[in-house]
Image (cartoon, rainbow, N blue to C red):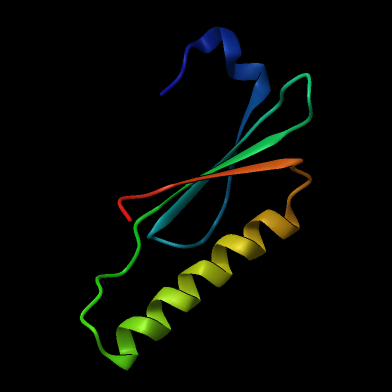
Length: 77
């Protein structure tokens, strides 16, 4: 949710990932990519670690594929 006065500077990215949403915000210093991600639960097993690495890789891929100058990642780490 954002003030509609800023609508022309905000673009929602399609991530194709149910645990992540991304938004580009155009600023005077270049575009900022804001990613909100729900990281997998740490069950102290190999599967949890693999899920964590997979989600980190997806965050990096979305940033790399964007034209953003900066990245902000929010989560419940």
